[in-house]
Image 1 (cartoon, rainbow, N blue to C red):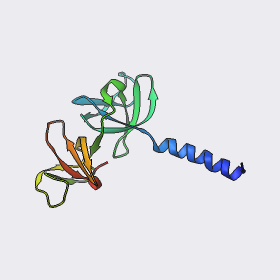
Image 2 (cartoon, helix red, strand yellow; image 1 turned 120 degrees about the vertical axis):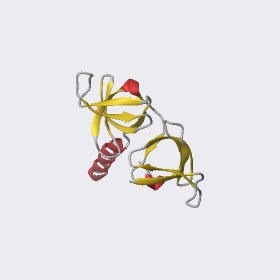
Image 3 (cartoon, rainbow, N blue to C red; image 1 turned 45 degrees about the vertical axis):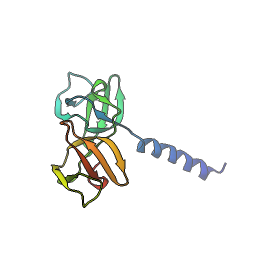
Image 4 (cartoon, one colour; image 1 turned 180 degrees about the vertical axis):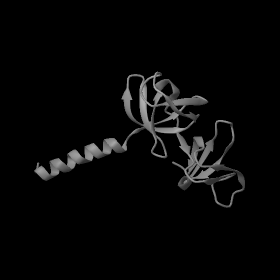
Length: 143
């Protein structure tokens, strides 16, 4: 194999593993985000159920993660699960009765509202908030 091909293969492996961070979601009503991997570290903020997280490092029972805004913190592994979830990334997002722009607006949410993904249809996602509210949202409005 040529040296150039070997270098390309190594680069593909390095970059593909970084791009495939494990995506988990908060599985309790409210979880503390800490500054380090342990309960002795400061609580930085709280996040709600279904908040999606990209795990970037593991240390014992703790996961370091990055969220939709690029913020990083630590969370105990008992507080997260593999739940398909999304979070709104725009200031105002319409939640609709169907998977089209012409469908009735059920309610509007602000940036940073998480939903569990129930199903997908094309570029639309049918989600449920922790409070039980459900509806369709366009893929371009979420992370």
